[in-house]
Amino acid sequence: MTTLQASNISLKEVHHLLGLKRQYNGSFTPLLSLEPLTEVEQQELRKIRDYFENYLDQNKASEGQVKLVAISPLLRLAGFFADGIEIKVEEGIARIEVQSENITISGRFDILAIKQEQSATGNQDFWVLVIESKESLASTIAGLPQLLTYAYSSLEHQPTVWGLVTNGASYQFIYMQQGNPPTYQYMPELNLLNDNSLMQLLQVLKGICK
Image 1 (cartoon, rainbow, N blue to C red):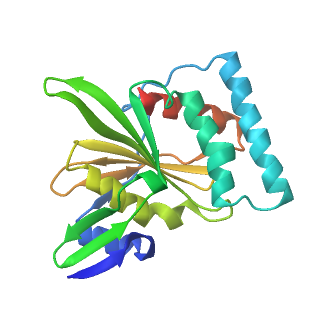
Image 2 (cartoon, rainbow, N blue to C red; image 1 turned 90 degrees about the horizontal axis):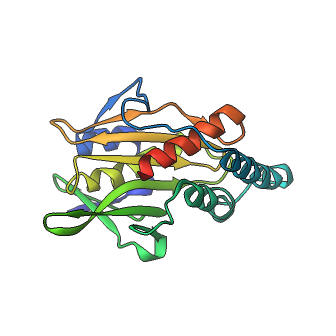
């Protein structure tokens, strides 16, 4: 059995090993309810942007700074810190292993948001958001193979899953579905430094949270 690290595999290898099919022209609106933001939310968003820009103006923001200055405040503002949702970070997440043929893909992602919904069998964990943060000057495309591998593992427990790879400034969402073959869609890329895009970013996060 050969073991590959998820952080070292290519997008082509992910497609081949997991049987994933890529789809284009994804849209948020058929999948999420994007509600208008309040004035307070808009003000808070601009503060997050300004704080993050301070780091970019001085130097590139490290992965840890991206999480602390941009990701964490955005998740809080979107409602991911509320009761019924559990946030796990890297050191609290068991290693993920995905097997395909005679190959095991192993790795650990940065942040996992688990929504606990009441069902007939009790509380069940649903993985609704996976974030793989990279240094601020790295392209979000660089993190897609790793993100897709982790999101794919959640399809064993749910029919669809949202994923997000970000460098703090750019935010690339993917939407993955069970199927034969399983598919994933690229959503429109959003940017923290663009005012209109910034507002939609919070709307999308709030929609996923709900």
